[in-house]
Image 1 (spheres, rainbow, N blue to C red):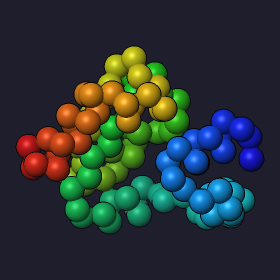
Image 2: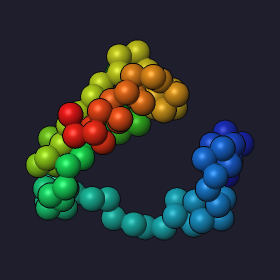
Image 3: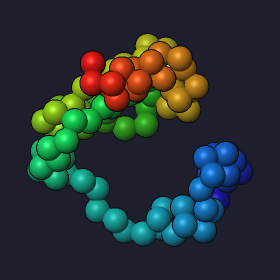
Image 4: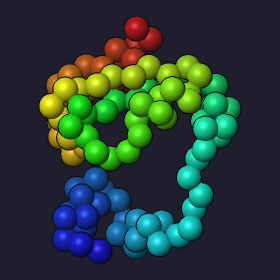
Length: 95
């Protein structure tokens, strides 16, 4: 496991062996039909500079999804941004 990934796993309080086992597994990715079957409210928060994945397509596939784009942020900076925290709190409050 690369040093950066180990650090991220540790900072998040995750178990290294479990994360490594998951990364090596052949878990299928959720498809559009799988996402469309999720009926609960969802929030997708992405950074405008994030290259982590297809957030727009994921949000579009979720029937009750709100999407927030934090311009100029990448994948790892998002959780530290007050705009992210504010968006999540508003979502949880039902706004």
